[in-house]
Figure 1 (tube, rainbow, N blue to C red):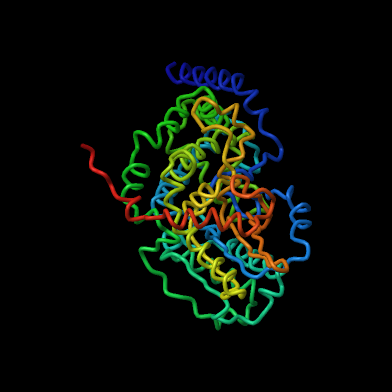
Figure 2 (figure 1 turned 90 degrees about the vertical axis):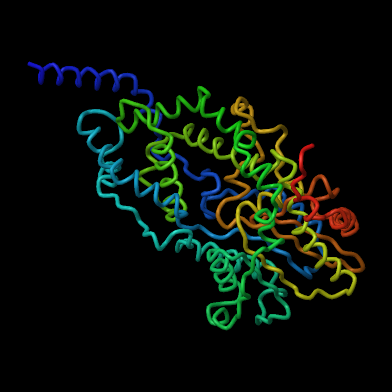
Length: 453
């Protein structure tokens, strides 16, 4: 008798779940867009803005590129040690439970997705942690090829260490990224003979934030303030509805825990970056609107931790821009560019802080927990500003007796609206701004923790 009652109860719960989840199941599109996945967006999935290209080309007509300064984020990687431990600890049993849920009549994943999940096994081992994944080899190589084809007189040449400076952080993935970038630019045969420098730490150009006690104290480890908006966003109706929808779609009769939700989302993001031509089964848990909510959740973290959400973030990048200034000023002064290519390979935190320093992609208002709807079309989103292999380049052009500077993000020209009047900068304009930045940049003073009296 008790068995029958239990069976009837289970059937009723299943019916209620099914009815309430009908619209949730219907919200899954045949091909849900999965290209906006915050800082784990694959480079080949990242959208690139080409709206300024024609105007930019017209502005630099008759000019010749003399020197490039490039800052590149490392390519698509495997999870970190902590993330990998979490994914391995949650997902294998989760995949089996999702299959069991559907056998009991709950959930709404398609059979082919369930088949993929039932046979899913982590596509990585502990030794892979933080290393580049194979897709990154193509990402970086294609970027190197792109710049070689863009400026053949600069880069379609025999590699000479006198003409090129390469630097990267102590993390192995940035050194690997440099190697594959140079492979794309100079060729398979040449790259084997290029002697890469030994990385060092602290590196005040490429990882300045790690050596800034004030930033670590006031921003990175200031959990109460820095991550306040993100915590509040988790409590909003948008986030709670997303959690309910994903849980129901996977057949659970209780909300997924933050750890479970994060694991499913992260695996979806990693696999989408690793295999851009196919859809990860884990991504089938989310609708288009779910992805938007989760992306905003990520944006709230990086906006305050690295971007415009705290003034100290952009200020710490002053030495990096000082390096750019030194190279370009010397080339203009001498009338000759040496080296002609400066190539740096670093991390998302470096990219975001430098972008904030020069005022690129600044939103009209701060990202907050309660303005998600208003910020749907925001210019600042991590899927755009810091995907894997994100890159920012400044190119010094010689135009008869004057110089101009072009700014490129993801290989496409972008105007420095707050610094220069046109899509390209007159050297005098950028020189004035960079010089002021250079003169006032004192990281020792900026990063000092001041005792409160």
